[in-house]
Image 1 (cartoon, rainbow, N blue to C red):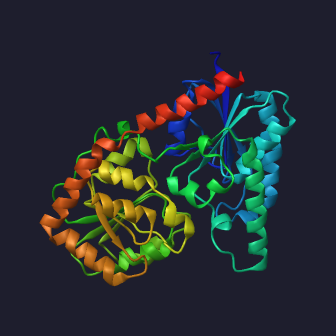
Image 2 (tube, rainbow, N blue to C red):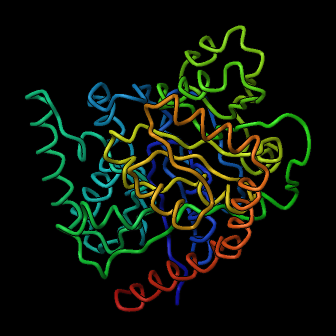
Length: 377
């Protein structure tokens, strides 16, 4: 089969999950990336085999309603670049990038394969909207996504529940590929499990869901435990909240490949309690699930979520109410002081550790792509 041209159209700098997809795509052909640089930070994608085209248009990163005009500017520039690159395969995530791919598809005689990846269900699409404008936007976005998905060849989801609760209404099951957000184990080659020092709870990843972060801080106040936050924050609200609290440390933004094994080596358990009133949180599966199991670290998650269902069934952690300080305090007390209980959770992680194998899912995706290419080109 001839080498194909693959272009990733992304609304952000490639994160570790997308980097794995990019590395896989290099097995199929020449890879290029068109990436929206909303903060104009002049980032580069360092890979000699990949052509990287950042489009610098400043925009609000957290509120999609405030970046409507910048989105149209990005679409115009991205389309110009796509017509120069003339890809055979387009890999996109989120509705706005799917719109870019669909416009290109509409005007090209030789239709590209579109791979649509969904790592989260957007709150404007999946949550109940109280305001009239919010309800209108929800209807528009749902109809738009339903229409755009008619042209996709593959839908990648990081939680099987995404299909059950939403995409099953308009995407054929045969197009779906489940790709759990498992780590590239090469990044953990130097990992060493923490064996001494004060019991430490770690939140690892972008700092959001601030009420749940404050819940952790409040629940550990006065206890003989430390808290470590490692990850990017859009503001310094949580840092200010921790002012004067010596038991809380901040690692800051980190390089995943270089730093992740060291960060996990500093904690005794992983905190992954998010706002379970959010419908996406109810069905999403974060990378922390797989990373904590591989690192043999118990995980604390929110009750009444798909994540808590898996965690409790496997016995690799504990679920608490995302609003209850009392429940979280009790869970932390038991994890930190009941060695038998903690040991049983670690043993469960060890049993499931062998299942943390991204390569088998990667092979399924590549086989799916190659199978479609054989029939189309």
